[in-house]
Length: 434
Image (cartoon, rainbow, N blue to C red):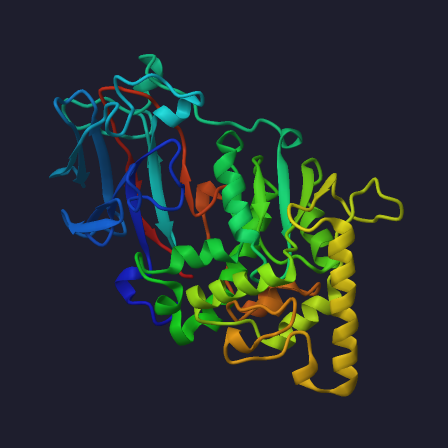
């Protein structure tokens, strides 16, 4: 954002994380460790001063010694100069669980990844001597782990035909993100990548603060930017074989078809989150408490008026692309009945031109919202993000340049391995003009 301090606009974080850890939270979980360009080391969401800042043209080496006893050691080098031990940690069964520990069912969950988290930068990765890596004394290149038999290749997706894309469908605050995150967590073998505006917003926030404390009056602009980022990620996702969950409202049939058109070879699944009216009110109130914002009534009413429940391609008269449609809460018949009732009430209130009689009145607080589908959630680009005519140019958003990693996402891990002598990673940071 334009008002983001200059030293925080182009940064990266380098380190390691365990194979089952969250990709987008390097250094913010118990099983990951990161060194950031701001001169901070972090693990478990706790940040401390370490080394010095790094930026354009700097080479950062991440070195791990898993043979050190009683504790493993993690240290970093900047332009060939050691910065000292950043962290000593238990790598065994009672700690990180990557040494002297039986492999889990998914073997890569018992291994560590080199991990880079990026914010408006591109990097050059070096894992071997051939890549240009100059190892510090006593350490071997990361690539040697495979040659020594200590490496495990992480999850791979060889063909798009073996992958699936799940599209969440429902009005704001229905519970789509909650369902998507739980589904991804309960199916670690699928390695789902959840894509949505929430993903981008999470990366924008200040760790440890609620969104409404982070965003304030910038929320509308942040939503515009987040929507643009989602569009860019969606475009890249169609080119990289893996499993995805598209987490937006997706109530417009035309928007659903547009987003899925490029996922030609994927198995496509629709998940409709349509809670009972009373439960919807509870979720709306919870969302409002967390976010401090609500979707404007006009925007919700417009979504409601255009809301069409999805159909699978084997249903008579269907022109959608779904192989399967799931209704985890209210089933299709009951959801359709309530949806038609809401639409009828909306038509009546529109004719009377009375907001007070609308099923989705604009309200200053959740307590005064009485409609069955009334929703409290962030305002901003809800309408723009879902209208069929959506165009990323309308957000004045410049797609980030990702250089040689143009088919990857703004954060990634490239492989994992079980116990080995040491590992490290080199990053050459370069500014982008975004």
